[in-house]
Length: 345
Ligand SMILES: [Zn+2]
Image 1 (tube, rainbow, N blue to C red):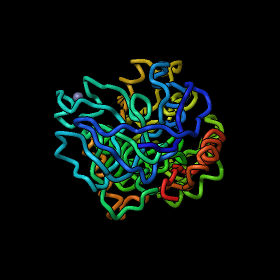
Image 2: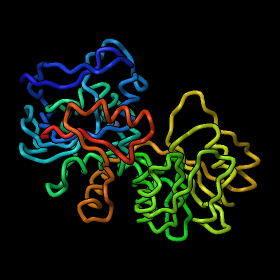
Image 3: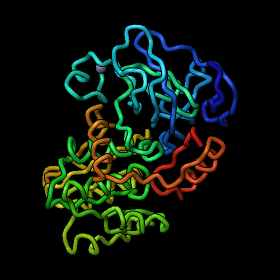
């Protein structure tokens, strides 16, 4: 099948709009007609080659937050059925190992890479994925909104439920609260019963942070942050750091209450965590790394959205010609929440 879409021809280079062939699905694969695909910083990282940068993988269609409908299935595929609405699971997992079988999919022992890096993704109107990499999605959720579910909403659910175990009485500070993961982290922590402070350097994002359930805190410099509008004189019991700079991590460790939990989600190679064992012990601090989400958490995130308990914040929805504009807004730090390309526009 001939389609037109965006492909990477050089890691870190410009995307190229072009026509190319999409092969029929092989055994254990499905062909998905893409309705919409999320546009966020992770996609830019993938295009830059941060996750993998072998020339042999090119050309490659980027984009992993895919929402669409199964249009054809390969031999031996029993589920999903043709016509099923689905969203993509970002990690190319084996589905058979100990981690996959116990609901820890993102810790798969045989990880084969990522959608949009090791296989073609959703910056094209059609994509072929392993059948094990699509998760059912209710028909009721509009496509662009739904693109936030498989990463931007599922990741916060993993943080709040499986890692930090947020509960009523917690005071959660989210660093980078206006971005795609951050804005939904705010919503999720509030849904779990916490009081939430949303730290954000971009003034234009503060109103949305307030609307999503947090007290917004302008955080241009970590030397001058005052959390008292959110927590009075108390310290946060949980800090979720989505910025991951040396300054943000140092602030987070310093700010935590006794017995507090720090959750980190960034993977910059050259940033260390400025903490001593003495500090961890005397203040009984717990450090959590949090890696993506499970397929079950994707399904549950879709249920939360369908029930109106979590509202996706997808502030820019563009036709395929508008992708570069959204990339620019991401680089400039002005995009509120997520963006999405809608292939039906
Ligand atoms: Zn596995």
